[in-house]
Length: 139
Image (cartoon, rainbow, N blue to C red; front, top):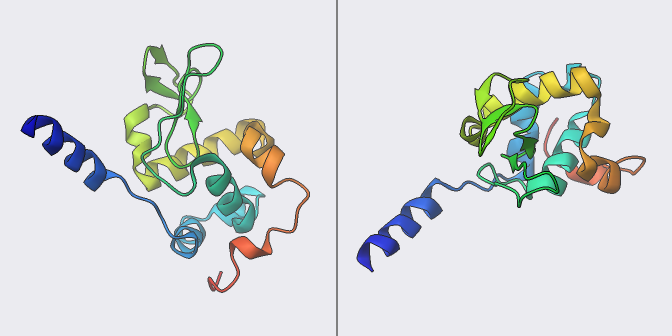
């Protein structure tokens, strides 16, 4: 029982939910505004996909694949792990729990497929005023 409690505490300690403004500043510092997608769109996307959590592994999709990290990157195409060997980003899916790795992979995905590759962006961000996502953040 103690081992289970310890493992749960370790898992909780490694989870990280970002603040929207901190995320916006890190995205700007990483040059995400040069992807042809605004920082507000990226912050909205991260909110819609993971509520700004870097450690999320989504439930199985209809094909058995899963989505990882703050941007919920799919393992069938973009990362290796969980029974799939996606190579689009050339990383392990658990590496996507690191924000900088997720940003680098998201840049690859948006160049290949555009921001509409993310269903969360299409359903929750596309065509909307997203200024609230970066309001007061200084970006």
